[in-house]
Length: 332
Image (tube, rainbow, N blue to C red):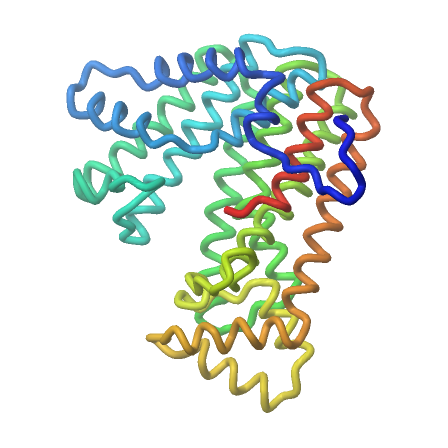
């Protein structure tokens, strides 16, 4: 690991984390692009537009780094990384339709340009391409891991919708939701990377558990942003949709009943003003919700880090540890 003076926190960049697999990421990009090729002009046009939406590619990065840690990157690793990104892209396209979102990664969303029908069918196309990629090469274990993640993501989303209607999400339910909605896919990435590099069941299970812990920490970090962490002003997207996340769940548990009722009245409002959102964010801070969420996030990151530290030092292991740290310190 690189040394840093004790009074100066080390700034972790995604580019530094990518360095041990920089060439492999370029190969993955070509693999991913080829996986979406089609003879249907409209589909090909939409696919090329999707490729212009430059994401962080965290999930394929996880697949590649985990494979390198567990024995080495193979052709099966590239297929797993492409399958992950195809399934993830499909869920994002479908999410934009469900949410009526008009932008994705600073560009117009696919449904905003080509309307919902094309967007849904394109998402289906991505799903089918991913399934066929795995089936054609008999990557059954990887396909099982990722199919199970998609099932869990759907169940988690529906459970959150159900609970948001009644505002009865407790901490255990919250962790079940984010485990299904977010951590399941991260865990599938790390498991898929391990599956492509080793047949040791202990290593595969450890990488799955590490991904689960990382995914939970990742989602808590996102939830903190909604309350103004780092950015300074609360965004309130979750509050607008009546989603109770960890900072507010804990604060509601700690607050007197009169305060709890006052805040829940605001959360139940169909339309919330900026003042409403600021009031709820201030409440979450005042009653320890923000501090509690940060502590749980750091603890989960620590558990993921501890798993990785059992493995011999090397650039892949160090990059994965850096990725854990990046997850909980990132500004967006």
